[in-house]
Each structure stands twice: as C-alpha cells, then as structure tokens.
Length: 328
Image (cartoon, rainbow, N blue to C red):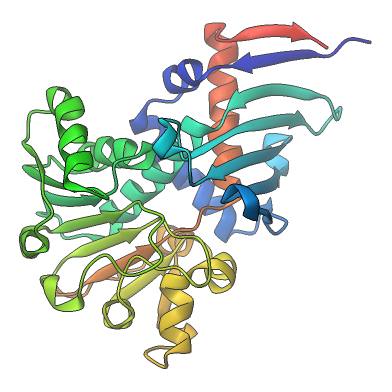
C-alpha cells in the first residue's frame, strides 16, 4: 500500500504559518509542555568533530494532535563561510493513529520561526510595555525571524544589529532595512546597549557577548543561540541578577551554559529560575515586579515547539493545497 506524503518547502512553511499565528501556536505549545501533555524524549546530539558540526535529533509526541514528530537539525559551523546556512534540517510528521508519515517539511525556517515566536511570546510577557528599542546579536536565520517577531509584539522604534564583524552587520542592514519603517543600524559599539530596552542574542558564541555593566536597568534579555553546557552569550553575573524564566527547566539544566555556568560559579542556584514560560502563561505569573527589573529568558528549544508548529503548518497546507503530494 502506498503512503501519501505531503512535502512542504520553506516557502510553503512560511506561507502556512505567518509570524502572528506562530506566536499563538507557541503559546499553545508551552501550555502543553507545562501541563505535561507532551512526550519529549531527550534530544540526541551526535557530534561530527572532523566537520565542526553537530547532528541533533528531536522526537516529540502530543496525544491531542494524534501526531508525533522527529526533527533533524544539522549544525555545520563552517557553513556561513561557504555561503550556506549554519543550521539546516527536516521535520517529519507522523499520524499516530496509523503510524504513517503524513508530512515532510523544511525545518530550517521552521526552527527559526518557532524560536523567534517563542522569544516574542516571552518578551511580551516579561518586558516593560514601553520597551521599543532592540539590540540584536547575530546576522543569521534566527536574527531575521527575531527582528520580525519582536516588531510584531512591540512597535519598534530603533534596532541595533551586532554581527560577528561590522561588515556582516552592515550587510544585514542593507538587505533588510527596506522591509521595516524603523531604522536598522549596524554597529560594533557595545555602549549603545544602554539605550536598548530589549536584547536578543542569536549567536553560537562560547563566551559572553557584552559586560554586565553595559546593560541598563529594566532591560529584557532573550538568549537563544548557545545550546551547550560550556557555552554562553550572557555574563553569569547579569543572569544571576535577573528575573529568570526558561523554556524548559529540564532542558536548560542539562544543556544551557547561560544557566549552568553561573550555577557552577556559585553566582546563583537552580532556585533562581522563577518558572518555565508555560508556567508563566498558565499561572499568569507576575515575574516583573518593577520597571527597573532585568528579566532574562533562556531557550534551548524543545521538540513540542517543532511539533506544534508542524501540526499548524500541516493543517493549513491541507486546506490551501500547499506542497507536493508524493506516493511512497
């Protein structure tokens, strides 16, 4: 018996799940996670040392979707120098009532989309309402979607772009300024951070990108780039002084150097984590108690985000007839 598989390109994925709908999907995703309605086996990581790369395998299952998913993410750190994406991959969606695969889709954009949508959701819940200036670290796929997502939940007035080099930041601004009305400014001046009410780090940095004293009171920081226990984008002292929310305690306490290193250095304990994002949503937790508080959201990414995004994408694709149907 042939299996009918819907194959969705990056453009199909983008058309099926606009950013505003992606943010709503992530609210559903993190609610399911906190309510323990998702099965998420530990992410398997297979290093490819000779190729300066990692293969990541992320399975997930949500019974109310009647679907399971497997995302394969390939992180090849030499790719940007070759003009190729740092992260590439595929998402497989499986019908759990029959065991048949029902969709195969690009996960490169899906990952950047669901990550940015989750960041925007966290920012909307944690940041000061008047926060409208943004500093973005990175120039890759996650930076592109984070710019879109942050502008979706806040009418941004000014954005600073920090790249690995100033030239990379300038190239980013040149490519994307026409898509936005607010000014995008390439810079390598960390002194500008004092003017940023929102900061997003989307890099694979192994060491902090800035100093604690360069961050103004009241800032909200989102860190999504570094995903290894010995890597971090944000200084440990700053994290310890912040109101901390994570996507998943379990995942962050096993993978996130931004959380693990300050704990190892004795700057904080696990109890400094106030809650998971889903907990903030379900319990309507008030994390920020003052406009002067610095809030910090750390995300390493969890499979239920991918599955929820893929579930929404597949539903829309069926309605709109997106993608190609293949018999296998």
